[in-house]
Length: 81
Image (tube, rainbow, N blue to C red; front, top):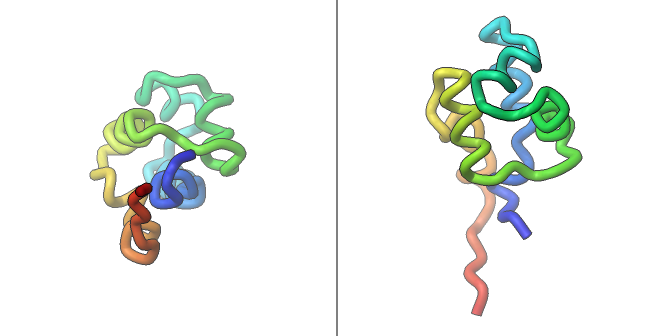
């Protein structure tokens, strides 16, 4: 299971995409994924892998922290025993 800091970031991705004036199709192309996969991430129907989130950040021209900032800052990391 993905840690919440990288699994619930759809609103940030969508807000950044819209602020940059990009369509789902254009950002998906830049990130090397499908529009449906990107839409599923934005709607938080499924978590994104660290690799995919990095590709999306690159496609948006922002750092990964711009997508995950709120989650990383507020959620503790649990290390399995």
